[in-house]
Length: 330
Image (tube, rainbow, N blue to C red; front, side, top):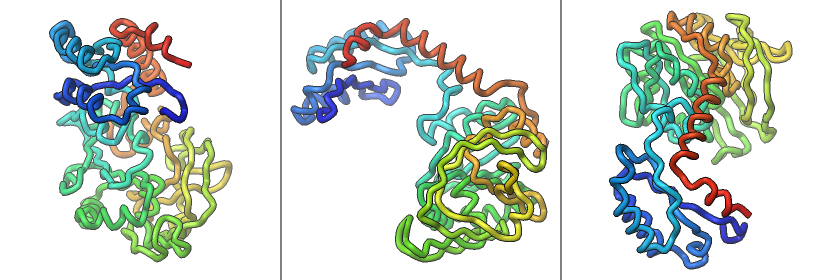
């Protein structure tokens, strides 16, 4: 921030506890050049009457000499917004609804692919954390994207999730792999040039009859596709390295500009695709869930997010010194 000459406002999460010690402590130990860039602080996620924190707020101002820009109460609609990190996806459980599980890979990427599923009333989206077993009653298990496919394949096996996935599939469960997760579902992931790490080849899960070879060329594009099984449009994007091919590509997940995209197993229960953001397409999401006998709400995901953002903007304007914050910009 000092190099960019950008003023800084620290945001303290009071819901985690110890916010006074955090902010005062930062002032005590931070490098002087960095401290000079800090112009103030905000207290976030306060539950209850904000005036109850008046004494603590004044204490922070006195000990740091930083300006306070307000106390932001807990925003109840925060769960409707795209997750800031993967941990936010597992917060709101809905017991009794149809369970969809996803694996919290150590190098998980593009976790916001799952945000629209989180907002479906009929879906209980379960994050399977390290050391936990994949729920035996899940209808669908999702392998999300990864920043290192071979690394996360090793991580997945270390958790015993490979055994759980095979058992899930034998019970008649469905599996969806997205991008890196798609690559993991094949027979192998080869990286002869060491693009993601040490050169070599890693055995895949073998749930799709395909294999992947990492390549230096990176695909980065917005995509308009059509889901092969339901003929519903998908507005998505691709960001990946690697080329995947094999017999199951003859049963594509989608059609992309007339070209087959992804793969589906012979039994129709294992799906792989390089498409990110696909569940934000409302008609596709409803049709895909219907294939799993999961009822979907008649809602527009994009409009719901925009509504939540508008509500958040109003919430911030009500409780924070927005004019003071804007005056800092330069």
